[in-house]
Length: 208
Image 1 (cartoon, one colour):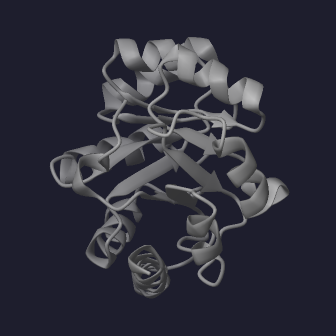
Image 2: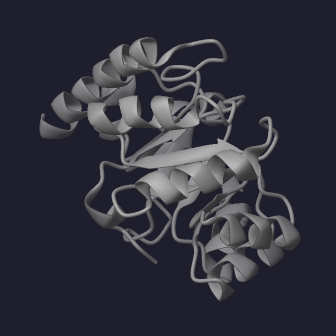
């Protein structure tokens, strides 16, 4: 289990729908703004192409991976393309096991304490509470209270600049951020502006 995020903020930029021809420019804007973990969901156009470009360009300065990973075969495809982070919307022990066999980082999606403990037992590096908006900060806080203190908990879905402080106070360790830092059609300048606002809000809340 890795809890230092290799020196990066525990903020995962989710680039759902990103195109291979724009992904490097978008990622450059994110990294310059302070994001160091980038996820391309596999239901994006040519996701393995995008992941390969990101790994080739930023593999030494960012953690690159995939989201919406549902099978062990997809784990292999992502790893073979150069990705290291495997994020899923669900808790699939086979996916977690294969990720760890390939020395990847496993962030499975969970919603209940049962799923959370099953993911921990399978070797997950962090837990992705999804959709976190249905729990709210207090719901995640209640579940986190019974989890091992060293297990990072990420909130995904429903986290915004105004609410990030509430999530941190509830004990959330990190965040997966999608439409608040990237939407289909946004250019690098727009992404840079939104990402910088999110990083600033995170830094201020984490320091307070």
